[in-house]
Image 1 (cartoon, one colour):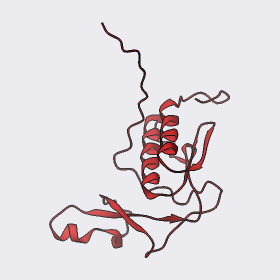
Image 2 (image 1 turned 30 degrees about the vertical axis):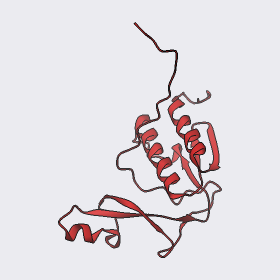
Image 3 (image 1 turned 90 degrees about the vertical axis):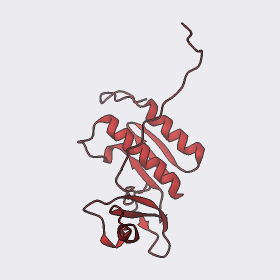
Length: 153
């Protein structure tokens, strides 16, 4: 039996349909705000949720017989985005939390905003770019859920 002499790291699978980025959480404690109607950039479509504003529905898609979709926008200004595992709902298990954070990291990178990650006892300072994204995803992949009072991976 052949066993390769290489190792690999597998990032958590991003959540398929995550909620929007937590735009009210800033790394410096301030509140993030949207760039305003004229300043936001269209970033894609996702399935409609009951809580979505009707003004963000992709009505042209619906008029053509398509599914009910919500338009998503980017263009955050004001502060760095904070992605904190402790702020996630306690009802999510560890894998679901890591998947949501992975999806949010990818969305934050696509939006062009700077973002920080807090996971267990580890904080990755705000940044952006491919190297920063991979540093954050690596932290998710290596995370171990350790009991309180001990160090996290």
